[in-house]
Image (cartoon, rainbow, N blue to C red; front, side):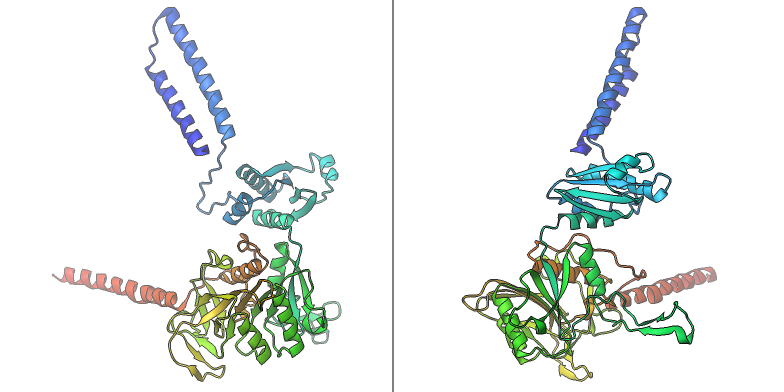
Amino acid sequence: MAWIAQAVVVLALLALFAAGLRAPLGRGRMRLAVRALGIIGALVAALLANVVSYKNDRHIDATREQAFTPAPETMEVLHALPQDVELIYFYQANNPAGRAAKQMVEIMGRSAPRLHVRTVDPDQQPALANQFGMRMYNAALLLSQGRRIEVISTDDREIALGITRLLRDDRRALCFATGHGEYDIDNLAFHTHFEGSHNHKHDAGGMAVVNMEQHGIGRLRRALDKLGYRVQKTSLAASGTEGVPADCAALVVANPRTRFAPPDVRLLERYLQAGGNLLLLVEPDAEPGDEFTALLRRAGVALGDGVINDPIGHYYTDEQMIAIDKYAPHPALLGLALSFYPGARPVAAAPTDGVRSTVLFASSAKATLVSRSGGTVDATPAARALAIASEGTLGPQGKPFKLAVVGDADFASNSFYPYLANADVVLGLAAWLRGEPRGPALKPPVEVLPTVAMTNAQMQAVFVLCVLVLPGLCALIGVGVWWRRRQ
């Protein structure tokens, strides 16, 4: 409607201009009257045009990178606001980044009816800054229904993440299981490095090894924190008869390295029977045990053996690094791009009464199965499922549960989490298990070096085009020019 109103204003002004060019000037008093009416009409039209433009303000960003426009993810968060949010931005006037952030939040306020924006320069209005308890420049104060969150940033996406945390009503925790060698959520580094043990000396005597497991999932944990999810550890072995804590919205078992003892299996069975939600990330070399495998089959998921080898749908040149660009129409996987899974075992839907299983994504139809040592397990080409989601009840007295099983855990580890759509997959599965209608619209940024990621087929296409086709065309044109000059 704003565009229509502005178009009407422009057409009206053009019509007034054309009428002024064609208006007869006349003589004497008639000439003065015509001029007076023309001036009054122009002033009235200009005034009305300004009123309409002010009430239907539009932001136009002519830059190719849309540098002066909030990110699409930010706008998606703002347009989906379920309640009013007040955003007070405290900026530093002599800081270019602060001034740019001020303009950005003002654009955000005009774009979202439920976002009420105020901008404050603490140097000009120190009393107002003290009233809200703000002591930092370039910081956003978010208020809604008695809640308060401060975000110190000039990035509109960070402010949108703050709004997401502010509005999250479900305070239940996302619990990560421990006790079977699972990935650690407190691991915030992804390589082993050295630190000085005394005054940070860098000589041989002052160096100590800080062992940070390469495949921890600390990056995933930080992303969940930024999205406003409460995260905690839960030891299945220490739970005893108490079971999974009642405040756990979902339980994540990320790469168990030891077998589940019968008491642990009974604990998980009771958890699913009580309507629990479980996310299992299991590597090809994991051996969860016969009792746990049987429980998964009763819940609609069958674990396969071997490693998937896909000669077509793989990332880079490794045929066991499966690339996925097609997903089932599932709430957890809406609108996802390419993701990859370094070393995945097959999983399958197990027909079970009262349980509905869905294949979330699978390899190409040319995939085979090999053992971890490289030997052939199943050479028959076929599409192999990598992830299954199931819903239903365990037993006639059970409550509805949700279960998602992925035949790989490394895709969510620190080493591979930031790349392509890997983060979107694991965050979407977590949101679905918590009962949210879809995955988060905004993915917290992770600091990684910029890369160009391509599947093997894309690399072959680039090679053929750049190494064969283009040089061949140049050579052909050169031969043609040479031949023509000989004639």
